[in-house]
Length: 163
Image 1 (cartoon, rainbow, N blue to C red):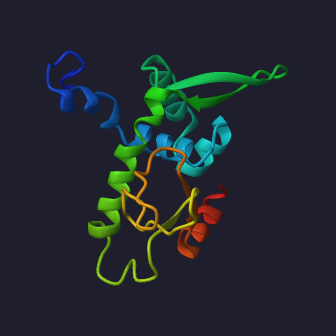
Image 2: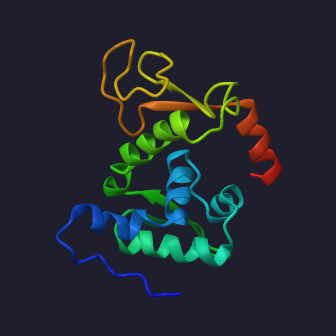
């Protein structure tokens, strides 16, 4: 397999962001962090990724300043991962990917029961659908503004994974 080109020093911002965000494992870990999962075991279980891969990607994300590691237990040592401001700014990227997938990534009839995750605006209680601006109050939606309610299909999938 040919070695992938390193784009970390390119002038192109899409290339630079692809160095981190072009990795499926990083995207799944970010998704879980946005849903409030902070502990290694919960992230590994819910993403279905192997522990070595989760560990390597969390180290990369820490090195890139996207997450910070915080001790929550001394014996044995255990850490949780928290998004930094840089990491929280990636919410819009993942939200846009989710919105694109809700529209384009399912076969006809596959998503007939509605979206995998229903998002409710915390400030006013409105169902925002795939909007980036709250249809009820007009507020621009950012990290922390939404509460997710998983669909029955998503809950079943997560239960099957043991997450």
